[in-house]
Length: 295
Image (tube, rainbow, N blue to C red):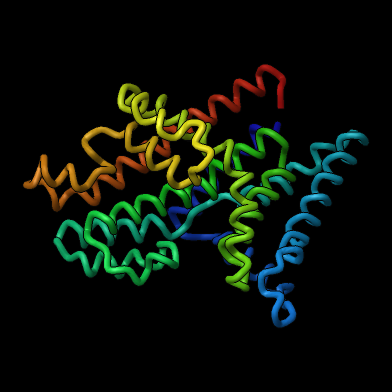
C-alpha cells in the first residue's frame, strides 16, 4: 500500500509542478521563521532547527508504530499522501527553464542570467560567469533541486517510511531556508549524511537510464567519492551518462559551433529526460521490493 500511496502522490505532484502549485519550500520557510528567534551571538546554534524537524519526525514514527500495532495502519495513508505532496515537488523550474532556453537561443546571455539567477546558489548569483560556466551552474542547481525534492524523499520513504522521508527532507530544508544564514553550513553538513547513499545510488542509476559505456568511465571518479558532495557526484556521473556533450558546453561549442544557440535548451532537455528515466527505474525497483515483501 505504501507503494501505491507514493505512486499516487508522485503523479499528483508532477501535475502540481506543471501548474506551479503547492510550493513546499514556502511551508518550510513559514515553519522555521515562526520558531527561529535566537539570542544575539547564538546565530550559529543548530539545536532549535533540529528540534523543529526531529519532534515531528518522532511523532510521525510513533503514530505509524501505534497504528500498525493496533491494526489501523491504513488510517494513516491519507496523511502520508498529503505529506508526500508537500515533501516532494520542484515547482517553478519549468517556466524558468523555458525562458532561459529561449534567451539562450537568441544569444541574449544577460537575459538568460536574469531569468535563472534566483535559482542558483547564493554564492553564484552575483558572479560574472561565462555562458559555459553559467549553464553548468544552472544544470547543477536543477539536478540538485530534483534530487533533494524527489529522489531523496523517495529513497528514505522506501527505506523507513514517512518519518525518515520527513527527516531527510527537513534537514535539507534547514540548510536552505533557516533564517540565520550563519547556521546553514552546519545544517548542510548534517544533511549530507542523509544524502550520501541516495546520491550514489542515483549516480549508479544513471548508468541504466543513460549511456552505459560513458557512465562506466565516469563513475570511477565518484564512487565511493567520500570527499565529494552530492552535486559533484551527480554532475560527474550524469556527464558520462549523457551523449552529445550535453554537460560539456566548451567541448560542444568546439565540435558543433553552428548549433551553439540550441545548446542550452537541448542540454536541459537531456538532463530532464535522464532524471525522468532514472525515476522510472526507482519506481520499478520500489515495486519489486513490494512484490518481494521487503518494505
